[in-house]
Image 1 (cartoon, rainbow, N blue to C red):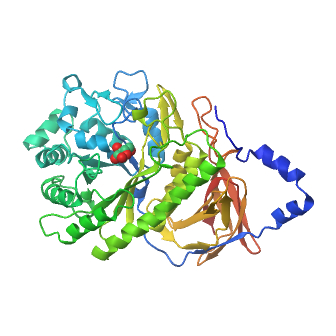
Image 2: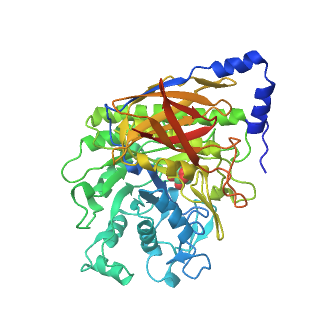
Image 3: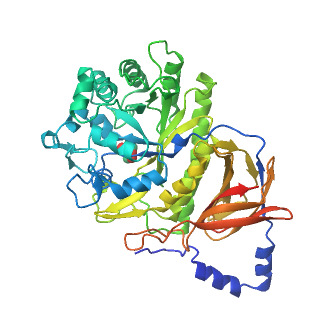
Length: 533
Ligand code: AHR
């Protein structure tokens, strides 16, 4: 049950107020000038790497067990133990990569516990997340099966905190070695002949904290050993397909890690290198997270949106340091944990990080994606935390039931932006004011997709005022726009198992008028349209 301390724009209420408003006010609202938005289609920018739409699946709460893995004997429809409904949903958003097995869990994960006959697997305690029993029934082969079922790629985070270089090296060898080798034969015995593809190798996780509380200097020495000795033997992974090693980078604004890792990278020699620097940054509203995922007022909404928009400054700050050492931008910034981290749902294990997901979260997802897209030249990997049932999830499950969240729908609407070319957009966003918080009213990005079609995404983050946008497209013809809009009567609207379709994308269309393409963007909405010639 949702309770708002201050109602947020129920549509019926808005209508009543509008009808009752004095004529002058009404006329003034109608006379508001549209937001002029210019799209420079003739000035293409960087490629928006599809991997900024990556997912993160940690052994945490019901993120894996229940959310992805139900076991081969489950009455829940599954393929080799993996939920069919979840696979289908993730295929539809073209999830490009999945980071696994953590998170903090990764630095205590021992991969040998999770291979071979299920009945022989060691049961351990998940000491990071709620002290639950980790059955290890979902291990390497199950994860790789899952990734292949959803048509995605593997981002494997190896254990630097409590593991060894040898353990990590043997793990990647197990996954990628020729079937004639001892490691390859072991994989074959577990049911897989062909080497797996490991697209990304995460060298530890948050090594400044749960990953071992290492000084940056200590971490960079470890990083070099892992980068040197953890090898990928898959013969198909050469050139552009080569595994990319992602080093632990900063926590939020901690520039010391960025400096240390990038200085080390600059000094690399033939024997080792890294191909990515990680950044973790969550929208939390303070620590520990106390904001409710279902019940919030407009001030809480504005605060979280404001905090989210800080992602831009954060990326700018770390990018500037990276530019010093890597002006050619060869090393991507991988924002491999981002999202809204709110208070655990009542009556859940607080260590399971279970939260609901509202239209607010969809708006926050769109704003973050827009920021990553604008930094496409440096941000080429990002992973929302997390994929199923944990934090800002795409998908919630409860036994055989599944619900898609507003964040899921945003990811789906943005599919055309995967591997598209960024197109510059300029506009005066106007202002949304809530108390002492001032925010831009709208945000927008444009891109040309891999088939040459032009796309525009506009987010109106103002929960009460619709925005009229007048788009002027330079360098291309745009006589109409067609796509989808995601909105709801309230910004705290959500999808539940009882009402799974409360927040759903709806068709959206607009036509050019004399002065340009006029898009009416409802309050609290995300509109993604193809601009048609
Ligand atoms: O996503 C939850 C946790 O947040 C991850 O395990 C950790 O890396 C981060 O602190």
